[in-house]
Image (cartoon, rainbow, N blue to C red; front, side, top):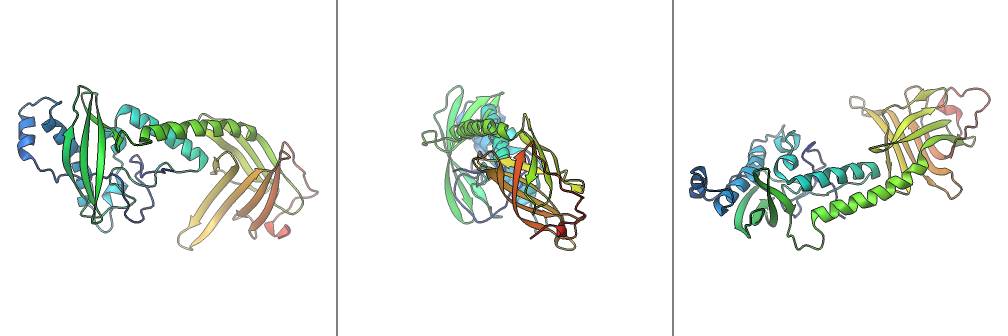
Length: 322
């Protein structure tokens, strides 16, 4: 399954090892004569203009990578949105919808960066435009070579003419078994089915049992999927920056605040539960909180609309059995 690319709005990813698939680089462009001719007024449906357009796109990437220093990875940290600027409207719209879905399910959309053709890139990353062909009023194709980490990667681009210029409509051959846009549509369709299942989680959930923290959890459905409205340990302390994901089977609710000076968690919540067949959510809970004397790490069962309040109020997590 394809997974999340360093998508350009955040341009944040865990970079690990060079891989294949299309990347792009800047100005290795060969044809200064073609550029001069374009500047002289050649129409935008000429091969020369399309080559210049690709040089503009991939040259921008090359410039960012070339400007990097040991302390500043310009390409990754840039806020410039390559996908918004250089992809077709339909490609970018579908990608954004698919990204929202994968954020809800805890998945990732790409496991490589389609601009640099890999999970990582080298300082000498560059590109070559091999061929531009099949030019019509609205479409064209381009064959490129991306050189990354010492490896040459073949990259086919489908281009679409819209908004007065050429934009990338597909990274990869259009005859591939599944194009990126097909993949986005499948992710969106599957995600909407998961969202329907998530509606069963909407409501208030309370702990069941004697030997775990008195966790209360309230879930609501928004236009961005399932969200946590309230998460707290009864009458003791709460978590208010929780992330929630649901993949159709497992619900995950997490929050973490880390002290980088002390190299330890300040607060930590990790709830992993599934429906058990009787309507309850069962699984594991890990909690660490500044107001607790120790952390809890053990099983938990949550029941919808059910709270079994104990006599007295537990003051510390150490009051709970391990």
